Image 1: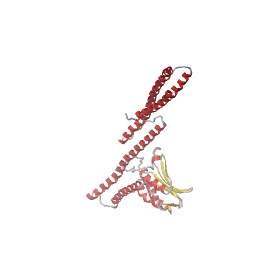
Image 2: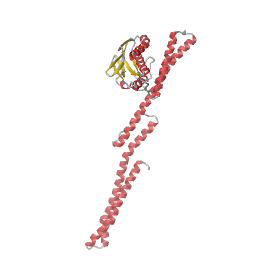
Image 3: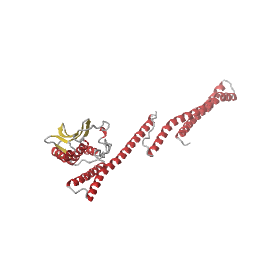
Image 4: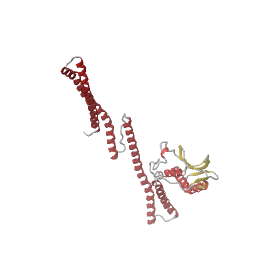
Length: 351
């Protein structure tokens, strides 16, 4: 009987009991004396006055007190039940949540305070469910990202050892590509585990030579996929930024463009001064990104591509690193997509 409803009902009964006791004491003490004095003034004996008082007042007072006490207990129990039920629902849902059932939710009561509690619990449960989903996808994504290069490395090394494949610059280049892929994944993880990136010392440099060098660096992989590259770069774009961070950002966008552009497609690289900023964009032909995915592309571990094929779909951390690097230098980053064209862009401060 140590429930909240019982305690509230007991408290209501105690309050009603104290109230009726005080009222009864006032009536029986003060009221009796006043009644006797009035009756004496009209020549009525004291014994008759006592009997009349008991008959007309005392019995009515006792009956009213009993009824009031019973009503107080019933009303307190009803109110307590209205409070206890939502709290019990939250407690049950919390136990389910602790047991791993992240879909547990509670109904929203009518009371504003209890509704706020239910809303807070549901928001917490939704957040935990989303984190669990991200954790599950993260494990699957990393398993795929690690499995592919490791499988390729194992196959190449076994073929070299057994003499099936002769050692050649091409074979060693393929091995190096897989190693570089693992290194990029490791560096991206280091950035995110560190909780973000700190802006290094910003220096003034010309962005155009860096952009052209990065395009030339990726030209071989673009050509291998039959992609054409079109550049539209100003003759000179002095900017103030971290050169290493900008190189990593542009390299990541070029790598994504090469990954998601269909064979025979086109990649456009542009950089120009716009107002008080320098706008850099990397666009590619191909399918549009679904509207529901666009707001989440720069979130950590978010992937649009769910097939996890070897050719497409990364671990979902590259664009998160891009966002962190750009914003650490005070810039902005975004994406636009429509059928046939997807454009990733970022801004950098001019020198």
